[in-house]
Image 1 (cartoon, rainbow, N blue to C red):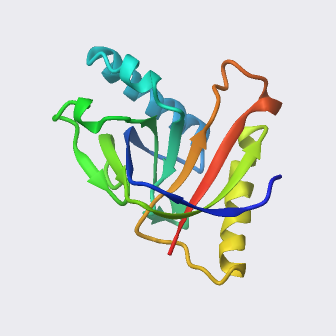
Image 2 (cartoon, helix red, strand yellow):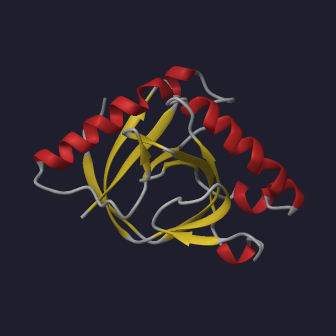
Length: 171
């Protein structure tokens, strides 16, 4: 696994679909999230807009039940948020309700690690990044979401070639 680094990212937005996580089953939550998002994308002819996006994203809510994230979202970076229909709620900071939303990520610092290989390594990668943040004397920013940025398409590359940026917001 690669080393953790600190990066600054500008503010940006993502069109997401927030769903409940049941029994720590993020694979099922991700499928439900994308399954609810794709019809909206087709209905509003957003595929060309989102095709210019460099990555899809996954987000864990900072709201926990029994020590586990209660909500999860999948989505796509929205290069121009004005192209997203006004009927989609605009939110920032955290994914706080189920359904479609245009989430604004505020500019800020992130601790990041590039995970290469199976998505099964995501939870451990987040643990590695959070431990790095603590050892570096920093704090996780509890007002922003943890994020996975999927850099390639799991339907088009072998599992060992998957690349995912693990992003933890820091203060």
